[in-house]
Length: 101
Image (cartoon, rainbow, N blue to C red; front, side, top):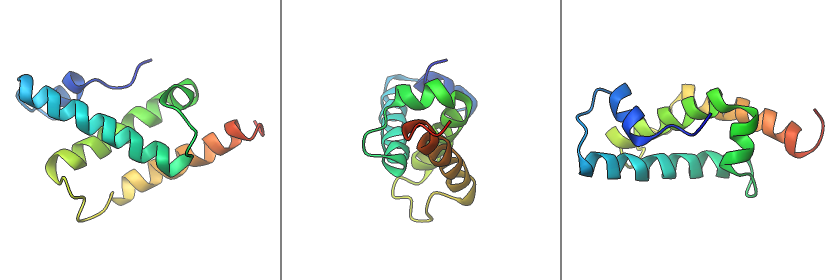
């Protein structure tokens, strides 16, 4: 499984697709994945997370990228659902990175 694409996320959110929207969503997916990885570990990669939790990671990236699309400054924060997803990913990846699985 691969990380969600800009086109998939635009379709999921019923946003018309054009060059600018695809470019924007690509940046937001990149930013969302970086924020999530940074919440887990400075050294974790997308590939490591995707190897272990592809569905959860894609959902978290999708949710955060969507939130960034509609509120670029995250003035209301991540939202509790995104925080729950990040906590689940963090806990599982801690086990993987520390060899306790």
